Image (cartoon, rainbow over all chains, first blue to last red; front, side, top):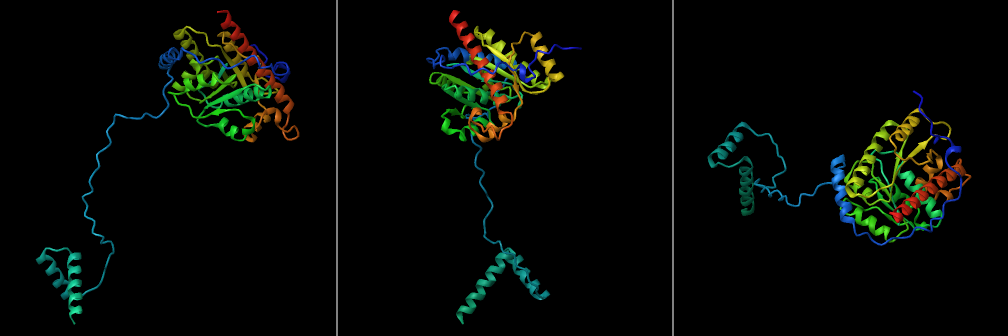
Length: 122
Length: 227
C-alpha cells in the first residue's frame, strides 16, 4: 500500500532557514485564577485515560510497627574454648554440672574463680 | 507567557532534544526562557549545570502536587515556559498538559512511538471536553533521517493525517550537533563549527522548528484574543 509522503524527511523539506522569529511579543502573564478547574479536569481525564500516579505513596495514617523486645540474654561469652582432658576429670566436671544444674560455661567460670581465690590466699 | 509541554509516554521519543533545541533557539533570540525538568533522568538539569552562564532558570523539583503551581508561577515571571515530561503515562504529565498553551508530541517514525503518542492525543482531547478549553497540540516527527524517509515514518505521518491530528511542518533531523549540546552544555549556535559536523544544517533545522513553534503560539494567542 502506497502511503503519501508528506515530506518531512529530507533537509530541503525542513522549512526555511529563516532567522528565529523575534520572541519579544511574548511576555509573562498574570497568575491564572482557574487552576482548580485545570486540576479537576486533569484528574478526571487522567483516570479515564489510564494516566496514573507514579509517585511513591506515603502512608501517613499507618501506625509504626511496635518494637519487638529482644529477650535474648547477652552474656558476652563469645570466645570458644576447647581442650583435651582425661576421662576421670571429664566425668567429675560433668558430675558438678549436673548436680548444681549449671551450664558448662558457668561451671568453668566458677572453677576459675575458686582457683584465683586459692592462689590469692597463698 | 506561553507554556510549551513536551509529552510522549514512551521514552526516547525525542522530548528532551526537542525541548532543549527550542530553549536554545529562543535564548539565542534573547528571549526570557525557563525550563521545568520533570523528567526523572534530569538531562536538562545536567545540561543546565554546564550552562549556568546563560542564565536559563531550570526547575528540577516538581511533583504531582506542585507542578501546576510551579508552571503558573513560572509563566507569571518568564516569557516562555518549557516543560520536559517523563516518558510515562503519569498524573504529573496530565497536570502539566492541563495548563499548557501548546502540547508538542515528539514521535519517531515507529509504530511504538505513534501508539504512545495516541495516548497523549486522547488525553488532550479528553481534557478539552472536561474543561471546555482548547489545548493546541502538534505532533513533531523527531530523529528523522537527513537522507531518506522511512516507510514506517511515512505510515505514521499518513495515519496522523487521516486522523486529522495536526503535525508540525518541520521535523527534527537526527544530527550530531543535537547530541553534542547535551554533553557539552551551551547553546546550539555556540558550538564549534570545526568540531561539530553539519552544524549549519542543524542550526537551520532548529531555527525552522523554533520559528514554527512561535508562529503556532502566536496563532493560538490571537485565537484566544478573538474568542
